[in-house]
Image (cartoon, rainbow, N blue to C red; front, top):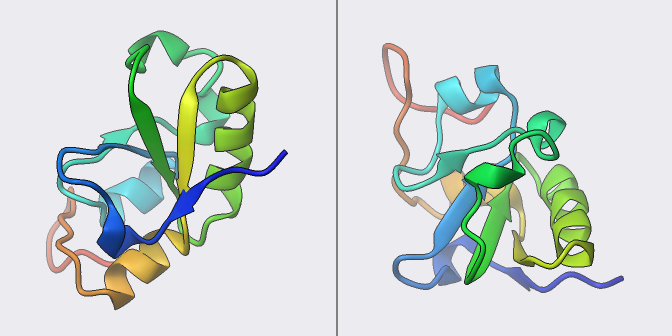
Length: 107
């Protein structure tokens, strides 16, 4: 099954961005508008996802998010992968925040 993909710089305004990385990756740096929902907890926390509209999934490089998007699409959601993940987000100079001290970075 193919999953639609979009470059980070081409995310639509107001996109529902779901970061599927683990807690330490999230704390190091993430998109300011992202919702954190680790791929390892996706099934248990499905109720936290909006039931309508496109979901844009992002991880570090795009591997985990494409797998999560495939699973979500097979289960009735409209999920789109963010191509290149947070690595590409960072390289594109898009804004990032961290939950810790210092400058945000991609872990």
